[in-house]
Image 1 (cartoon, rainbow, N blue to C red):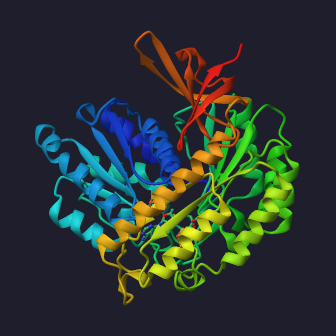
Image 2 (cartoon, rainbow, N blue to C red):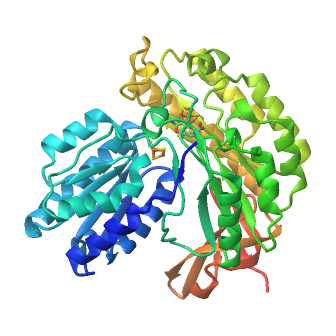
Length: 459
Ligand code: SAH
Ligand code: SF4
Ligand code: F3S
């Protein structure tokens, strides 16, 4: 593994600064998962390094970066439509630089399309190439050609020490690994994010320590499969190492894969108070036949075995999951198996998705694609069942008093509403003030809904 601290970054950034006279504003639009949120904080850090300052909206920006997601067709269409909207901005400001970053920037058919049909897009930047932003902006500012490449990704190593502009002080994302080796048959991620590579444990632990010293109260470790983390230590050992850091903070992590949940990890989750009592473990389908076609390398029996152990090890732990509806060949019987799985496994919440064929993945060319109306109808049955289960789970919180870390505040007539999450990751709303953002407050839960809890602050 190649761990790089790219010295050229500063040289190119200084060059951009000199070309711009240190001025200019940047705007970043982010789609997709938390990995993209984390990457956008790095893109913002690099933009600051190049002397740009943050703009409140794209109209005021000289550099617009669209950090895209390719996971479903809908995500791609949304990003393309936003990018299309920048055409008129480029007309009124010919100096404007528009860059397309993220997962779509590593799909060759998308890059071709951007190059040929979106003349106001100046460059694409694949996810493994983020550190090259200053080099590319320098090239374009000094009169270079538009740049469209995918091949240089995926960067085979890991670039450490990139500047980060964090959106919030009280919570932070920390990437611990990049890429994915699993090749689930429906999924584009391994093609756009490249092979799995893990950061060194000492770099991760140092970053977490710095965050906690800076007042961070909630750290989410990120990776497509955090539990496949592999360096000198295992993922469970990494969690232990982070939990040893002094301070009042919680550790979360996502996403985990059921093929890699050893007892060692379950024991650590049971033993370490600092690890939030929440586990996100995508199931995808309740039918073993479909799971096998999905190349998930897991079965219902294995999955429910993990949950049983986990709930024994950490009683009351919240479990959330991902479900795909309408994978090719999914029959009524298969779908019933998924509904049965939800009834048996009783997730606190699920993220459910209608299967979307992705170009280049095996499932996209499988026989037996399920017609859209069938997928939609199954989805509504799935949501109805899970809505009832989630409500039942959330009702267990009624009357309880637990700390809530406040993330946001919204003014309402006669006051305002704070929103935040409790240790179990449940969204909680209560009356409060804007000064409460970033602090932890004891909240008694008065009422539960299927997606959120409503409470009152306890003095
Ligand atoms: N690495 C994680 C999450 C990957 S993407 C994991 O393995 O679980 C997040 C979710 O998007 C997936 O869990 C899956 O449920 C969904 N997803 C991925 N590809 C999809 C597709 N082609 N159509 C619909 N949903 C998809
Ligand atoms: Fe996609 Fe599967 Fe990898 Fe998750 S584990 S990112 S679903 S290929
Ligand atoms: Fe989307 Fe890429 Fe994340 S495809 S879900 S932004 S890894």
